[in-house]
Structures are given as structure tokens and as C-alpha cells.
Image 1: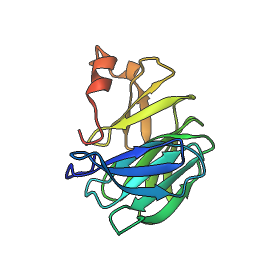
Image 2: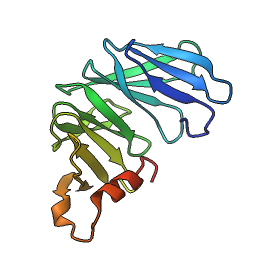
Image 3: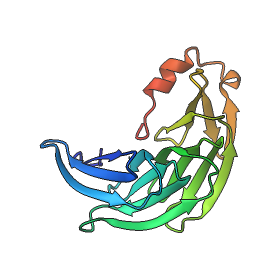
Image 4: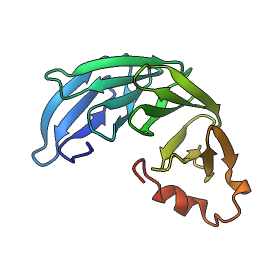
Length: 175
């Protein structure tokens, strides 16, 4: 969902990102550029940019509302596996997680990778709370990990968490 709730973005196996009007179900725009299926999409907090992650091992940043067909701002490369998850940390920073077991933090304005964190094995996912804490799950195992700065700590070191699954399910990219 866009920040104003007026559009919904979806990724597809046909290598596209589609923008929809949720009230009418009308297709607004199709964004093309990925070389394989699109697995993840996330709007920036201000709704001006959209990030997409793909089987092609890239994250692409779009300005979806610049007219048809939408403008590709840049392609972020560095993952060695499919990108399963993308999430905005704030206006200029974006996180992505990949099948390669890495989480990358990007400067969206420059396209530069600020940090690479190796934490999750294949088929993990990533969610980020408004206070920039991370949580993740790998291969169906309930495992919670938070980030403090760029260092990741396993849930076992956080004794106040009795039910990691409940906490995991409560976190969203916008808190």
C-alpha cells in the first residue's frame, strides 16, 4: 500500500511491478525492468519511491508517479541470490534480504551499499519496525533477531521475549 492508501503495488512472475487502485481494482501502471520474477515490493514512507526485489538478484528503485510507464531511478546490485524482501528504514535508507543469507542496507539516493549483514540462511524473510529493529524467520523456524546499529543479536540474548512468534507477527515496516 502507498502511504496515502491510494495505490497498491504487486510483484509478479512476469517480471513486472503493477500499481493498482484498490477501490476500483483498476490497473494504474505497469513497471518493467526486472529480468526475473518480482518477489517483494515496498513503498517509501513519503510514497514517492517504490522498491522492488527480484529473482534476478537486484533491487530496483522506481518513481512510479512520474507518468506512464513510471521511471526507473536505479538498480541496486550486490546480492548473490534472489531478493525476498525489501523495506524502507527511513527516507534515504533501504534494507533488502536475500536467498544468499545477507541483509544489505542501501543508501537509496546514491545506490551505495552501506552495510552487509550475514544472518539468515536460504528462504529467510525480513521485517523492520519503525525504530529500525529487524526481525526475521528462516525456513519456517521461529527465530527472532534484532539489530542494534549494524550488529545483529540472536533472540536467545533477549530474555524478556517469551514468545518470539507473537513479537514477530506484530512487527511491520511502519511500526
